[in-house]
Length: 68
View (cartoon, rainbow, N blue to C red):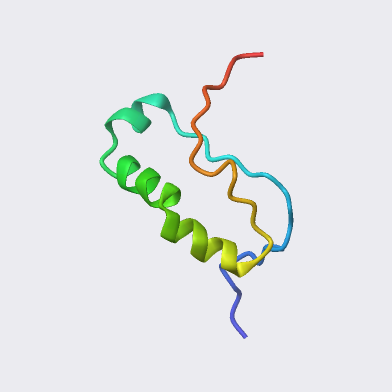
């Protein structure tokens, strides 16, 4: 057996995870807008919700980190 390069996560978890992106990427990177558009679409949210175990209420919200 070979070694796996994938990590299995407990997808039924209610843990919250953030994607942190430098603000210049959020504004200027060509992949950011299509990604953000996808994760806020009703179809995407419905499909992910149908998997069970995911809370999509915060998905797609943008917050600025504050030094602290």
